[in-house]
Amino acid sequence: MKVLLLNTDVGFEFEIRNKVAGTFDTTKLQQAGVTTKEGHAGLGLASAQAIISNYNNVFLAHAIKDNWFTFTLSVNKA
Image 1 (cartoon, rainbow, N blue to C red):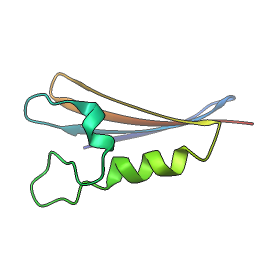
Image 2: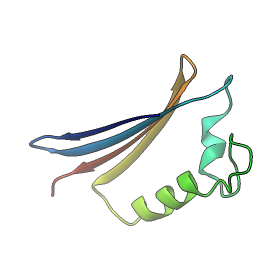
Image 3: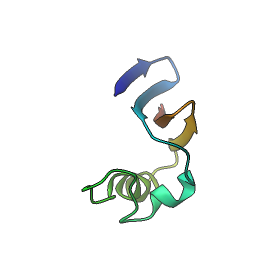
Image 4: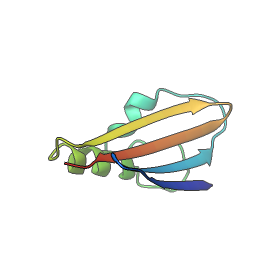
């Protein structure tokens, strides 16, 4: 796992990268109960999506590239 926190004049970004085996539909990961890890509840991205939907200045992005799953949360200063 790799973690990055970037603070800039316009806001900050929090990024987490995890190794994954193969590829999968990342849009499904926002659904509660969907996970790629054995024994996990699959609530992380669903919870994050529910929280950020209450804010106009918070954005969530995720992607898979080269067997890395990247989750990025961006918060723009108001």
